[in-house]
Image (cartoon, rainbow, N blue to C red):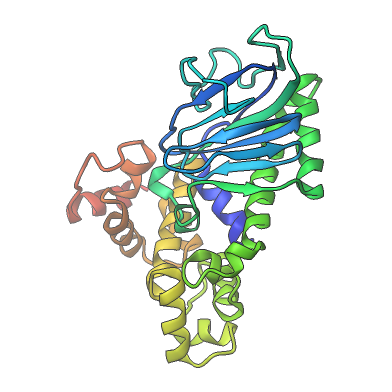
Length: 325
């Protein structure tokens, strides 16, 4: 898998939420901050203004996408003269008995020019948060793009008119939309011009080649030299370049990604500990359990049981857990 696909696979948790809403002016809606979530707004029809704390208003037109990687609070209004006094909407809150809201028409009861929005939120697992997402700006604005609009139209149609199979179709469409948003951003001018951080790492051929190698096969016996060879650089220049852009030395990132991948296996399957260990490059179950506890502060079995960080198991506990597996 490539790096972006991996980030989505390991960081998103639960079912993403989405809604299709149509307002008639005058209207305004506040959206609450959602820690541990990423949200988006897509203008399908009409226009509106995005209001953010400590930032200038931003006019949005049909086809525009706004992405909030850290789930930041924001307000949407039809006009700068309109005040949004409604209680803030929390797009991360599940609706009892319903994963998705259907199209809501004219919630304000007004009769001015219409604006239709597709909004949604992705729950992210803080225990497996990837620096790629944490390093993004608080707000990403993408003007209308053909490839994004195609996914948006499909998703909007599934929400507005649920049919057989809609429950299976909507989650992958939401994931694809998130991937397209990230891909569009990392290919944009601001990301290409970044001096440091993950935007620069993904646009740096030697470092990006090493990252792809690690994500493609985390169990391989990688060394700094073999990762440097992926990018056709010598060992020392590669290590400096990787550390500067990624924020961790190559082998430190390899270990972190192995443990992150292992956490995903533990949560999503009942695989024995030895199988999970082998999948991330550990031939010794004890060595794997020790590395995992060093990263997450809890033994693998207790992590699987949902006791993240609630226990500080010692060596004897790890040995007993391995014996049980």
